[in-house]
Figure 1: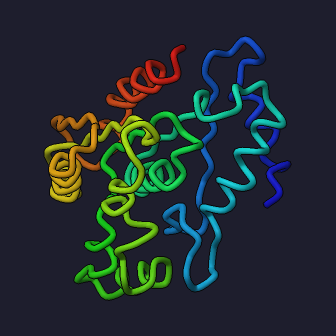
Figure 2 (figure 1 turned 90 degrees about the vertical axis):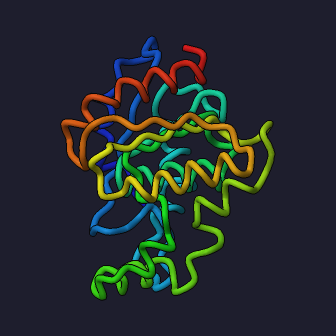
Length: 208
């Protein structure tokens, strides 16, 4: 993927060589892409981020290249993407956070809404358990190689039960993580409030 068209806005988001923290926010279009290489070939978003975007950032900006200098986070679909990518590629990220993440692939590919279910199956296939499922990915590797994980969700969010199930799954299998619930729904007012906590979490793990 050619990231040169995004170079100007990316430069504006960085404050230069002395910046302790640089943020890049790739947009997935068309939606939904779920930061995944779709089984029907309609998009290769995971490969674009892992194989193209990260090397592009390290070659273009004064980053601290390597796992110790890189974290990932997201909300909703991006929360799923952050958990999936961090757990699937633990050598690339020291920490990951999810706000209100759509973390349950089983719920998505078996959704009662036929239109949504078909979209999900075009991306993931009919069997959700496997290489793109955060529930399965969390059990791979060990505590020494797994990124630090932070998960939160609003108590009025329609994805609350999926996040509670993921939290319970991690607890059951002894996977270290931080889990929080706060008042709020699937909305920007919630994310705007709690992104500061996510940034503090990443700064601690990045040691900055």
